[in-house]
Image (cartoon, rainbow, N blue to C red; front, side, top):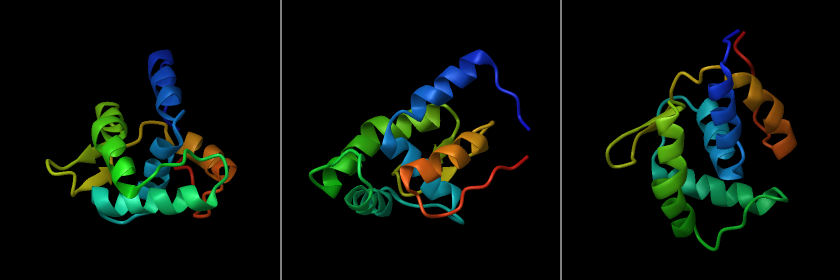
Length: 119
């Protein structure tokens, strides 16, 4: 099990506060290979429709804009994802201790795919 220092723990909790950032991580955790920003935005829009309490966006374009300018850069800066130069290749990076938080939050968020911890 990976240990986190207090600073990293605070950063992780801050990143997990937004449901779209959590969804990006859930989605990538259960994907083999990379995903582009367009299909990721569409998947988030679909998820928003069926999960109560999720932030409702007016369009896939709005979600894509927020991913591009806010959510993906934050996740990349924290080292949780890597993003290609044109946002067409988004992959989960080594999520230092993140697995245990995703495993706990996924069922609460109603994410149906199984998230497991790597102990």
